[in-house]
Image 1 (tube, rainbow, N blue to C red):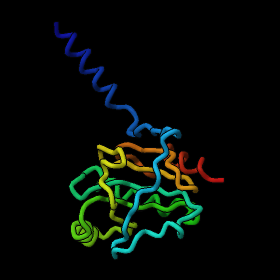
Image 2: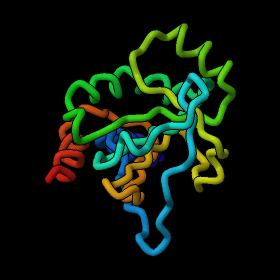
Image 3: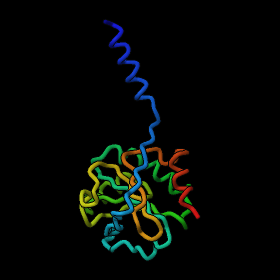
Image 4: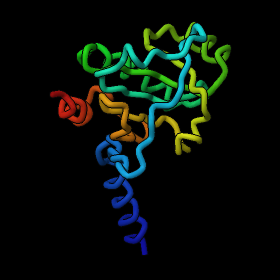
Length: 164
């Protein structure tokens, strides 16, 4: 009888020791999602004309989301690796500007924080963090679900494959 709990324990340990990377979900191209409207921290609309021709990475987060906060230093490291003329990273929340500003001033990470003008749920997102990736024409091409190692080989390969 003792062998059953031992087998279960071994199976559990094997399952939990796998890669930390989350799968990349490719968005169904028959239901493209456009880039949502967003505001800069100063209240001005995000100028998507300035971002034209870049791959847009929109990381959806919230101040209460521990996995979101945990991955922010790695997202900052990613911005130092990706070519700035090819990629733009936005950290978007649907929380109030006041809440976002308080968080940003406390954390001090030099990231591009913006406020969504729609709810995260209206984007078909029901778990955080989730990252939406848009191609140069503004079409959603990937959804990355959950936190991840943003500077991992697998993630960098994903972005490298988007380059011309």
